[in-house]
Image 1 (cartoon, one colour):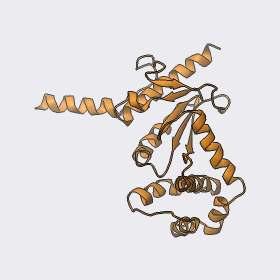
Image 2 (image 1 turned 60 degrees about the horizontal axis):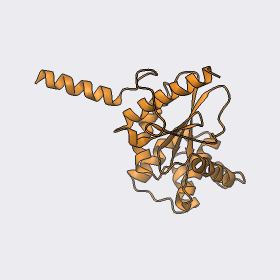
Image 3 (image 1 turned 120 degrees about the vertical axis):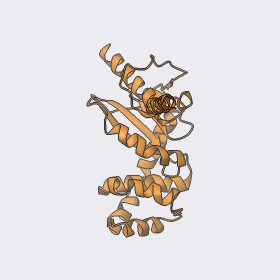
Length: 214
């Protein structure tokens, strides 16, 4: 029984631990990732990891705390960015505007998890902008600043740009991870979120090696 418990514990650690670059087999195109051609524009000097997501996605809700912990431990040559997408669904476009508005007024860290919780645990329905502003104000956010950010002239183009990048990446669902603008991680190659992030680590290592070879 003790041996079985030890093996079970080891299996759990193996599933969820974030392994460093070089510990997994060389990732293969088609099997582990899909090449993005032409590549997305990325930040200069760093390997950028993009998470395409939506607050309306239940899988993104489950993934959010896991990827948050992973992103906090990324090496200095890697940056992490989240991009909300709508898939041309008006209700999800409003959720994208919530993300960009919170980011613009500096309250994203404060309310990011709360938005997920409101939708997936508390069953709050954000049918109108007014409902969103009322909810945010109830959480201590400056309602006017938030409303102004949600309806800013630039907001429409930000949502459209996010969806355009998602389309260019050929993602079919969320969450979806893109490394260095060139590699769309194949979620179906993994069995759980721990394995997904291990695979992402391996693709980051591949991108790093390719940059060194230039």
